[in-house]
Image (tube, rainbow, N blue to C red; front, side):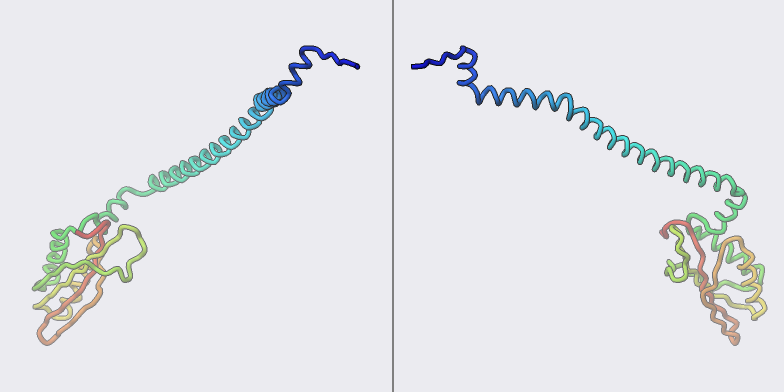
Length: 190
């Protein structure tokens, strides 16, 4: 009979073959991850982060360019013109100022104001400018002929504040006139 002799290491490997293969596989997998996959994954993550940072940089540069353009446009405005526009379309309703303008127009045209009413205006015909609101002013006038009524309208037209005549009612027999005027403000009505 032939007896095979095996070395002790061969016997140990034979007994622990499955465990040995598993340990060898795990060692190879760890080395492969450490030297092959991890640097490539890091490169992909870095490239993705670089792309995101480049996109963010481009968007911020575009925003800065837009701000620079707006700053140049603002600097190009004549500040007297800006103040005049702010007086034409004030930031609030300025009811006392409106009353003073209407009274000055009435005195200049030698007519008497009998009634003045204020109401929020509808948005019909308003340009699509964000923040622009309108106020309707109903005015009743008496003690004047048609020529004085026209003088009153001319006086309103020469005011710095913008007035749009929405409707007019003329009763020449009793020398009374009614106007609905629209004026504008920046902001919301209170």
